[in-house]
Image 1 (tube, one colour):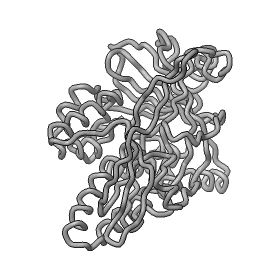
Image 2 (cartoon, one colour):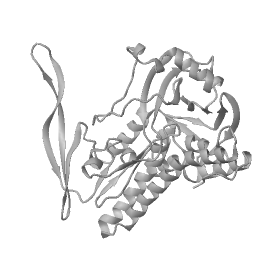
Image 3 (spheres, one colour):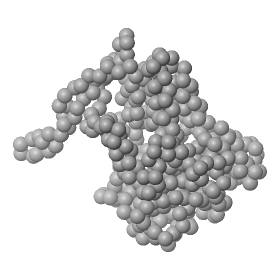
Image 4 (cartoon, one colour):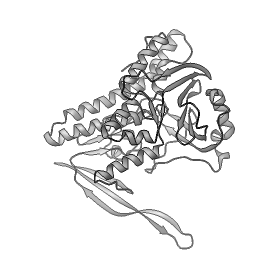
Length: 377
């Protein structure tokens, strides 16, 4: 889900037309409270030149970005990973392992990944975007602070009617947040937050838990449990589901790096902060943040003054702290006033909007839901 702010950034890169050609546009968000319709948010009045959310398969977006890199004369080195980082007087020494796949064994053949070579680089700055289990962050002994509760995310892709409305549906209940996202090619994706949480793996390779086999071991991903969650959380979609084509469960932790700019190393993406998958916040904040970091980096390499890099890092931390605080503000408002129902702060956390667009919706919700207890930053 690409927010209007992200679309503006992709437009600046010159690739928005390609992205929109492979997307469907969502012009409204329907909100549900425990299965009952709560509100309908039209996105047409957002203060953006692109007042809609673009829904695109991740593979298509990555393909467009990779093609953009190749056209610039650069290439991605696949099957490489950081081995070590050392600080030198004039910069960094970064060792990178090149990983090869080799057939091993005699009686029982199997494939293993082995280090074919170790390459050395001597950059002045390293942009560390190596994920939730960032090795660079661990080598630097930078703490990854917990700023929210851990939870699981259950994802299901289904066949859908391609003629249905292009509307994002968000549900809120005591069980957690839920979402239904129409995708191109007659596919829809359901997402449910859950207190069923797998342990975080320390494996450096990204672990995707896709369980199309041995489903009896994972009852939370069974078809019966899926239909139960839809009926309880998003009943508007009951009867529209044709076939489950893919399912997975992924653990999420709401984390924030204690430092973003660390004397020559700038943490980006899930290496800097993680959480809130329902609203695709990491992606929609991450792309513009990367652009801001690169612009600031250009000035730093030219002048040696890192003031702008420090400012970008502070902005990243501040925005993530604000998002993380929404749950706290929600609990404080409800506990203090004895109210029940969906708190607008939780809605803001789940919306795939950022920046001025999120602030606009926050102000509108404060009028409609009659509360001043909103974080609009």
